[in-house]
Length: 113
Length: 114
Image (tube, rainbow over all chains, first blue to last red):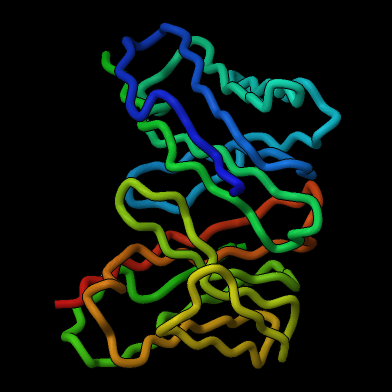
């Protein structure tokens, strides 16, 4: 069964610190893996999109990495800001499932001043 | 561009009532999607559309209907609302599908069925 699991479920860090969020997936083969940021009460917003052949993709202070061999991805946030407080969702698109995006349950990040 | 807009923001329904959730996008996207997000769960695809006049079921279509008469609009209809349909509903759109395209999400409609 195609699954996307994220860890930790929730995380609290101090402003200015770095953090790394994990995504493990069983979807295979897949065409791309995405990370979204979802603020409370809002819709998800795309942060990064990586194809199966890419290892890393950056968007400002957000860097996503992908290890297709171990079926793991991580999202690293550098120099966190209060505005980074949100849920971060990992999404995997299987090959052949054109309209099928398998969403993880997300990691809820809280950044404290 | 307003992007993807959804109305209403919040609604309370009684069991058995019906309603339509509205979704409009102004980006001329062909592909549109309806998802539901339950607490502690990943988004689940309800219905999707590849263009005006073409719709198809996603993972969890039971209890819902859609139509796509124009490129811009993709309303979701709930018939005979049930407590299990209490959720947050997100509409999304994209120019392409299946590749590295970006999905753009609306702000969501929070629905409570009592």
